Image (cartoon, rainbow, N blue to C red; front, side, top):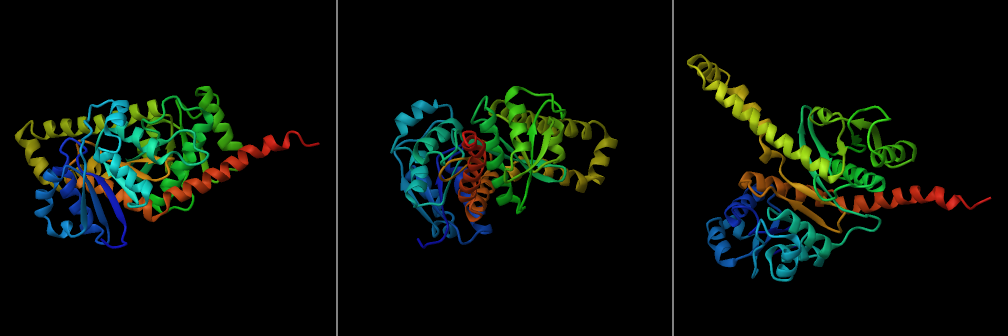
Length: 351
């Protein structure tokens, strides 16, 4: 293998394991022919699938692993049982060792976060990591975080999330100054809990390296009112799952309506192009890949039930984060933020 960009893949992760990971990696390679992969997992299952894809095989190395982390395994159990033995652990450790630039897994989210925090550690100045999702909007895409890593984040952590989300949006969308909003139950300054109000005050009054646009409500996420939507993990996860469920519900309702009568079937045939375009916009595979922010390395979580196209999208997210220096950008911005936050305190004792 040459000195090209190397991505570590947890080949056994997800509902289908290598049956999705291998063809997903092949798709990603077609779009990024300079990338190489380290495949961690059961060599007996990986090798036959890889043999059927010679172009991918030439750009891969299989690293055998003794243990697979189950999708329903408790994070603490996976951490103890899989230490130095599971493909998930070894893939993350490859990033720590500098053998890979990023890791992508469709496996157990809790186990992946637990192992990633243990192996990679958080960046200096980061209290808690966050999971950022790429959210389709009416004007493109937004970054929403946290969607499950930190439940009940305080004001300082929400500010850190804002900085990390802004860095990710800059890397992903190529914008120099992405806009940031705090998710709240209203846009009025008096609304929200104490943590949200304090975070809003800090983002509004302190000279931080981001463009804060104020509060946003739940319906503003889909509108794409801001590039980055910041919230704590419980609310973010509920919002994400609600959006995914609503998209599936709309698709089901539409399919039922179009098949209800002969006239509706004819109308569906005539409007086939428009419906195909709608299906493309709602396709979760095109927006797959949650990024673990705040760690000393790039970790991307693919949806466990996705197919090859969805996994390839997650790999592409990892590639973009590496090539645009996500970790370095976050470290620099967080250091600047902490200097700003500490400045008033340092001046309090001066006369």
